[in-house]
Image (cartoon, rainbow, N blue to C red):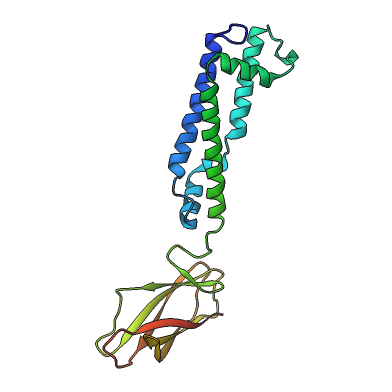
Length: 226
């Protein structure tokens, strides 16, 4: 180690910062893994993990520069500001401390964690306006089929649909389903709600008395939010 560039205490200070940022970046990468493929997951993760909106690359660089300035002040009796290039001193002192590879690895991890955060944010912004598990029926109205709640006996079939409103349907909700056997349309039915508030959930029930022992399929073919 060349004492012209550094001292054991300066090297220890560099090492502590490098380890700190490398550990933080590694934790972010592990925690954010798998949070960029689903918009709902990305949105929930972003809300509960503030680090996603706290990039580290610039902060890490500024912190290392601050350490280099303090180290150079120590070695030059407070004349760090007179140095021609603080960056050159940082590179030389890091090399003298044998920390070049460690710094580069930490910088790479920090950069990867920041890139991951950007991807999480971008994916979160694509989250649909309706809740997880719903699908858009028309603009402003979403639905989710509800299974296992049939009240029909042998002589009827029913389909239950929870509907969710983005802006409210003050004058009601209407929906119609066409009922088919395979590709053959055999019946239709509809249902209404008198009112559905903003961000509220209501239920529509479609009942058919078509006489058929096999599987009937209901498909929404018309809907309105008034």
